[in-house]
Image (cartoon, rainbow, N blue to C red; front, side, top):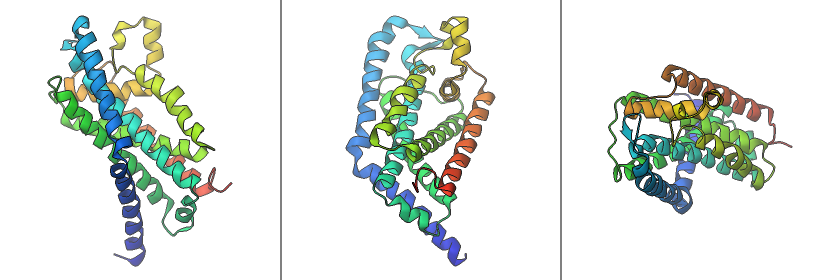
Amino acid sequence: MSTRTTANLIGFQTIVRREFKRIIRIWGQTIVPPAITATLYFIIFGRLIGGRIGEMNGYTYLQYIAPGLIMMSVITNSYGNVVSSFFGAKFGKHIEELLVSPLPNYLIVTGYMMGGLLRGLLVGGLVTLIALFFTHLHVQHPLVVISAVILTSMVFALAGMVNAVFAKNFDQISFIPTFILTPLTYFGGVFYTISLLPEFAQKISHLNPILYMVNAFRYGFLGISDVNVMLAFSIMIGGTLVLYCTCLYLLTKGIGLRE
């Protein structure tokens, strides 16, 4: 292994290790809130309201929404980790140290993406454990579950980096999660099957990429989906590639970073 390769590997590992330590260090902000929120969702929607709704697509309402709630926590935490961490580095001016270092931009992008992935999987795993206290989950397609959660986490980690690059202040890093990401998630089939919607609303729902991610993940658990699973994976893979190239381009050109 050459000296340059060794140095690049050390640099990449340093970014990932720093991101992981950050997640653990501020666990009261990164791990506890989504766990509490998920518990409330399971109690209110699963137990109190779900009992009145009955079955949905052959499963209890609690079983039906569990995969969606897990995926929702993965999406929000993967996105939130990178947008806050990268913007913090940008705001504190120490992102410049990375940009002038010999570490390739693709490793910088990958390092931050891995940080978002780690938090997304960590919180997603915790929410899954919480779900098991309320209902039984049987994984019918393990590879689908693993692939869907990893690809989704990568997509939103990279999206968080794009948001952080263009953000000028802390208000702008919360605008997209509040006014775009949250509505898309709630209308992404987390709490219902789109077959309950009128035909025009179903067509509109199919424009929501989160619908495909949630349903692919649900298919891995329950074997049911409102969308074509292969199309869902195509969207996730395509989204990952497009956003990765976008982040790489932004770092290479210094857009939003050297102004």
